[in-house]
Amino acid sequence: MLRAAALLARRGRQAEAAVNASRVLARGFAAPSEATAESCAPPIPVHGIAGRYASALYTAACKAGKLNAVEKDLTEIANLYSDSDLFHQFLIDPSVPKKEKLAGLDAILKKLSVSDLTQNFIGVLVENNRVSHFDRIAHTFDELLAAAKGEVRATITTAEPLSEEETEEIKSGLTGMLTQGQTLLVQQKVDPGIIGGLVIDIGDKHLDMSINSRIKKIQQLILETV
Image 1 (cartoon, rainbow, N blue to C red):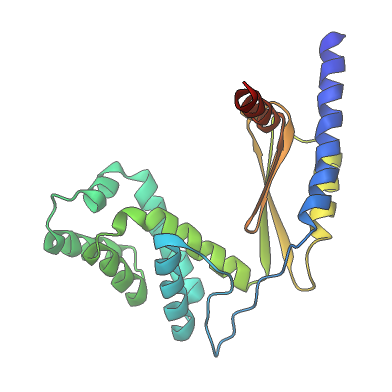
Image 2: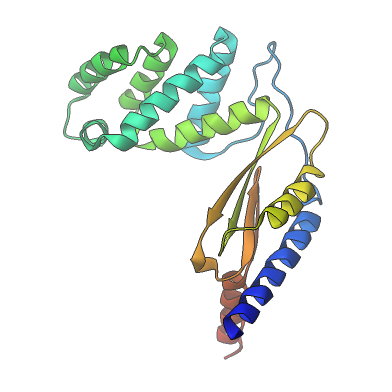
């Protein structure tokens, strides 16, 4: 009986957090600019090493009319990168001479039938000692392409799986934030570590309404007071 009551209470907090999240995120959520064929400028700002390389690849692929082809190439390479420890270590091992690494990559990428543009790009990463950033670069490129297509991706993290009703309520709130022509893509994650409430990542926004986050804030306040 007590367990059922606790579960209901947690559900209530989760639903309340969902409503509050929609209200907070609705403030200032702007649609990304659409990249045109003429400009081929990245549709959203991205930062850091991954941002610089992903932006350069996006612009080059756009001008060549190969955005979708490059996306497919990066997905295949990323799968190999994560599935094969041998390939992963070969790429990031600093003791392997660049010439040998480039020759090995050339053979592997040809077997994957990737485009010349993608192959040249991977070569640049090797030459500039940035191949260890490949995973993040591929992810950032994916974000750029999604933004250009008008896709807004949201990740909803909760301590327990959401009910269908709760999921639809959150989706409805998030969809109301979009502009005409945009499409919402939602991914759900379960992380018992947040204890309760929810965490929403949408576009470049992060909203932490988890109980774990509140506990940490309270602990910090106590430490500052002592």
